[in-house]
Figure 1 (cartoon, rainbow, N blue to C red):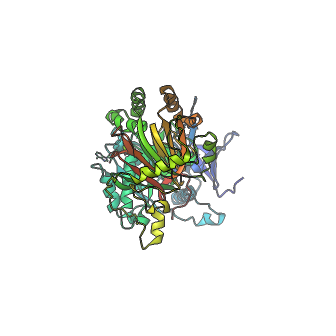
Figure 2 (tube, protein in one colour):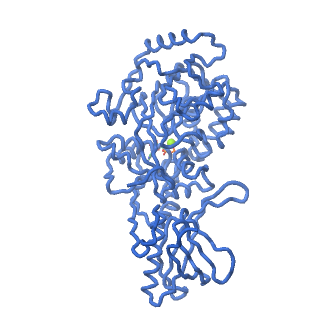
Figure 3 (cartoon, rainbow, N blue to C red):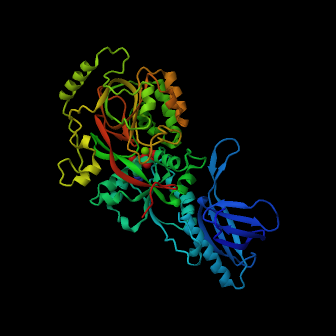
Length: 543
Ligand code: ADP
Ligand code: MG
């Protein structure tokens, strides 16, 4: 049994039932003094706020403690839902009005102190430290999803922030690229974090805006919160999974706002990406083939929300395209899943040249062919944008180490690759590089991927895959069971860096973090740079 820190007599609103309430570092226990039934226990982990409210002539007490909590409740048939609950406790045990008020304020301070993640000692109960009010800037994209982001803010986020006594400054984005500019120019010291009500595209912009600042090393540590207002909400789903070990509940908006008001932080690894668009950072994925086509082509069904992806998948499955290319990568042998997929013979340590089972070239021939191909590589001009990326010849080794891993410090996208790279060449249906657990609401794409992890997971389907198999994969992604289907025509490769060179002419699309990029060679590597995402269970604490 936890130590009781505060104990008091209250009256339950509105029925005036007399109660005994106990506060520990874990729970608020409410016992009905008139019955012998089990007490109600509110976990402080579910509590997001606590207000002191004044009663009136019709109420049984002059002062009330109103507690706001959002527990995960089991649904009757399947799943969970994060639900809003309140409890109003009247204080009438003291003689004077002012004593009742200060008692209510003492309880409020204690509850806020503990729910902010602190452990309270018995000595602190007489002088409880005050928790400072947080102030967020909130970027809302009116174009994202079904165009309801502003409504989501007004109907849900604003109220929860009010209950948690969080101050917010709202900025509506006015055009594509605006959030990048805002993040580049914002006076960060004024805010405790940036909240994004949109999809992954706006997060991508904010991250790149922060990385484009002179003070990027500090700026990228700004806590970022995400409320799913887009049609692709992979980061929001991945954060909830990282905190709770569950996919979204039936109420994703409350899930994400709950993560934000709890205000711990977790690392989010950034992947440095070079493409014909220039150089930038990505946090979610790279997609080519089936999945990118679905993402981009379904833009026209934006009005139907995330159902657009289901529809897009059906359209593409029946008009299956094939994509030829070379996928090179630096294997991550240290990844804990390397052995799992190696056993399934899909992840080969040796250089493999063709995805066609009929390939009879031996290893040395393949290596020679690979070397020749790289030497002859056409010099595709990459329009490199100036980012805070410090090049290999930098005078500052610390920043250089941080931003770009050694194996990519000298690599231009057109350079030939060193021996530690392996490659696959052939015909694919689907090529993804995944950095987070979820790619969307119902896409539990890579359960092994961790927010702050340093592994890129390549997931590819060869062109030999049948439509029936593809449908089976698509239907299994919701629960992550598609990884059980890994066999001959499916590949899962943990790696540190990859390069994709499409061989076929412009077939389909390429996308990074759900945003279209120009069709052409792409190279990406995981960096040591970590952004910070706000969540209920963090892997580090905010200073
Ligand atoms: P979704 O998940 O619905 O695609 P995103 O957050 O990815 O939502 O945003 C989609 C796109 O909207 C991004 O490319 C972003 O740059 C763009 N955008 C942001 N603000 C506006 C605006 N006011 N008008 C049009 N596009 C915008
Ligand atoms: Mg998007």
